[in-house]
Length: 145
Image (cartoon, rainbow, N blue to C red; front, side):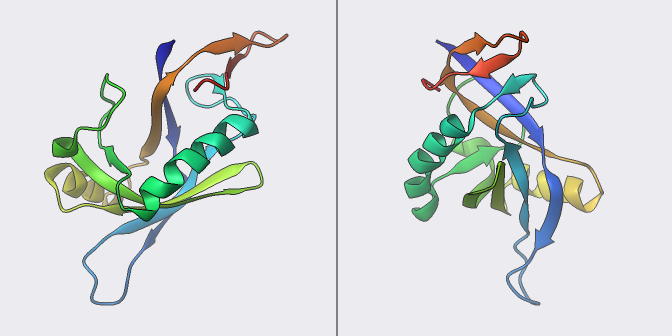
């Protein structure tokens, strides 16, 4: 079992707002894809992403699924470093579509400034698991993720 950290540059990033007077930046985009090599050269089968989505859905509904701006070396989020709150995730075909609220924390304000400045940001999955190789030598994330 090893720590697997994967970054996926958010594609089709949209900036959403609650209303004209809202100062909360919300983003939406493609947070991941099934059965396709990601930026770290790993492939997440549909069954793996679907099972993880089912595990985090209660956390999303309880507003407890936070993320950090940088790529920490541990498998849990330190709330003192939180930059965003995942507010929605769903599978659409082979894409994982996500929405997040940028928090008014120092890291969240930095993320907001980066996005406003046109920087392409990524979203990262972080968990413990093992890898297998397929007949092409591609690294496949196993069901124990």
